[in-house]
Image (cartoon, rainbow, N blue to C red):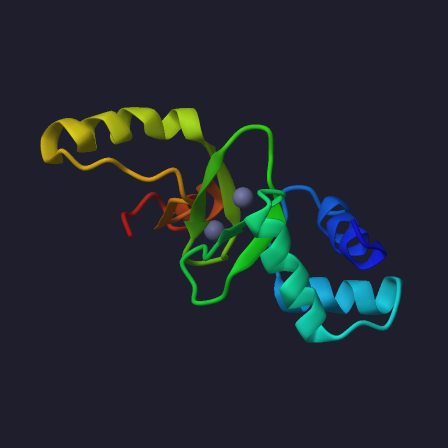
Length: 131
Ligand SMILES: [Zn+2]
Ligand SMILES: [Zn+2]
């Protein structure tokens, strides 16, 4: 593990539950630790992903977000209004996974699943109206 890789890991670890873009990681490493090329940060994030230390998710946008891989797998609920991200334990998806297989013979991959909707606060502000 090179020092630069450790800095990237530390940056992700400093914000548990946060899903950072490569640019965000680059800015933090740059500001807090050391001068580093943006492309180096991208390369390190790709490498860490291949080694299973970091996971990627798009969270309903075109930009890839990174976070440390956790002991337990999780998926994401993304609020379309405030962009808040809620972690959805993989177990909560297992019924859906089973149902999709039974009805369509389709095996859902282990990769990230992002479901969009309204978070509890935005739904309340909305007076319970549906999206
Ligand atoms: Zn919201
Ligand atoms: Zn996540």
